[in-house]
Amino acid sequence: MDAEDRVLLDAFRRGEDSAFSALVIKYRESVYRVARRMLGNHEDASDAAQEVFIRAHRALLRFDGRSQLYTWLYRITVNLCLDMRGRSTRLPLAGEDDDGDERSSAPGVEEQAESRETGRAVARAVVELPPRQRAMVTLRLYQDLPYLEIARIMGCSEGTVKATMFAALRRLRRALSDQGVRQP
Amino acid sequence: MKDRCRDVLERLVEATTGTLAPAQREGIAEHLAVCDRCREEAAALEATVSRLREAGQFHTPPEFWAQFTNRLTERIANDRLPATARLRRWIALPRHAWGTAAVTAAAALAITAGVRLGPTPPSHDPVRDQVRTLVTDTMNSTLPSLGEMLEVMGAGFPNEIDLANDRARP
Image (cartoon, rainbow over all chains, first blue to last red; front, top):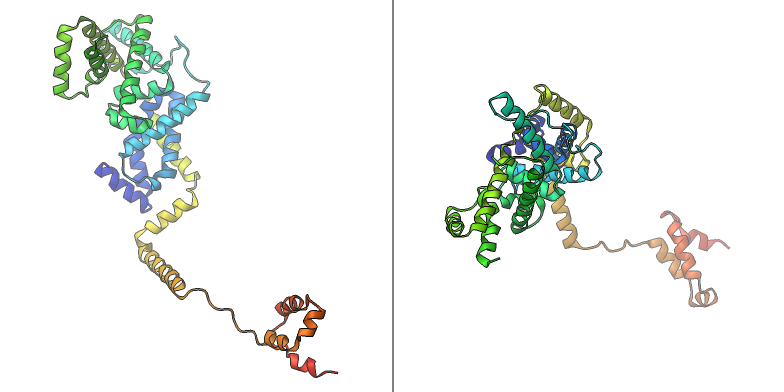
């Protein structure tokens, strides 16, 4: 486990609540980004990230430290999002402007507009993937997690992750092509 | 599809997402140089991954994280930890460590002593012994449940009852 996380975890075990706050500040954006990719909108992602840290606070004393703390947090996040996704009513519809605050560093006005449109198309394509494919794509492409870590989080083999990723990328390729997104 | 193509396609995901070892990457490049179909597939996958990654990061309003953390702190303050978790934290506190160790050692000692000495023998009850001497075989044969009845009654007798006084009465 990361040395800094271990220090914070030990401090939390000794009753220092500020240690948990430090962990929240360290991981809140990563947890939110995973939830946002998986759920497709800000409100649900924000609620999910809150719930992840509430659950983590309850269970942190039982965390054995054999895996990275972020792996453990991502597992909670993915499971929660898979569960929320199953009963959510706030999912974005095709064409809905749910990613208005997704930006890129494109310089000109036209490029920015095109980039925003591409961002929306990509977010829609990702959110329309089957849940487990969506989780794996999010963890690999956006959180840059190694396949082994993803396999631990998803509770399957590394080979299964690779095969699922392959299927997901083919599907995304078709979806982006259908939405008229040009290849870079 | 040739076996080599299948093998290369399986590893293309790793190659395009950047986790393949350089030696394996070279093997794939050699195959792509001579196989049009795999080369097309690789180019398409690479373009998709590139497009997905370029799509930008999510940006949140400036005040969002402060509100998020405040709300979370409030929720955690209202969300009492389970009793077992609170006990664990209490035990882990350095100022409780010696006390916890002493209590644990005493409990371990008591359990060990209990196991070694075994169960304690039943205590001797003089009143019941006195009663048993008064009951003859004839009484037992006449009243088969007399023994059981005396056991039940004996269980309720206080220790200070002196049966000898009752026997002396006419």
